[in-house]
Length: 199
Image (cartoon, rainbow, N blue to C red; front, side):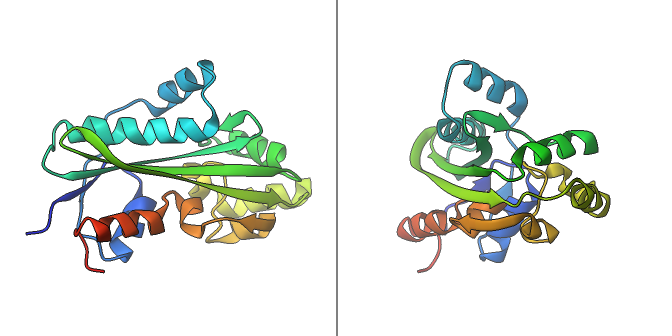
């Protein structure tokens, strides 16, 4: 019998990625305050890359304590413009402010996944994607948000590249799935090696 896989996240997108890949899993969102943890990590001077890794690990660790026999996947994503880190936007105005700061700029998305088993980390991966946003006009920015708010509220950066958000960019370098929120290909490779899925 295959080992139980648990996703320690309430993200509908991450769940959809695993489901579409044919993974049988359970969803058990980790009870953590992501905003407070991000602020704490940033205050300690932790790099955006390592923040994504630490948050993914905290999620996996917390859920693994209650499901020690399962493979628990924690995942998190950090958007960074230099040393500045952006979170999800609660309001349309906040999303507009984020997109205003990102336009014409090259920023990074760090997408991390950590797997815990029996309360211990057994695998981790962080993917970095670099995205160059076009110098979009105020008129287009406002029209874009009119058409896409509040759907993009749950997306760090305020865009969905799988939808109209792709029009905001001139170049993207990196893993498509990492942009959606999870380094899926390395994760699937590990699950195959582990014997959880056929390969």
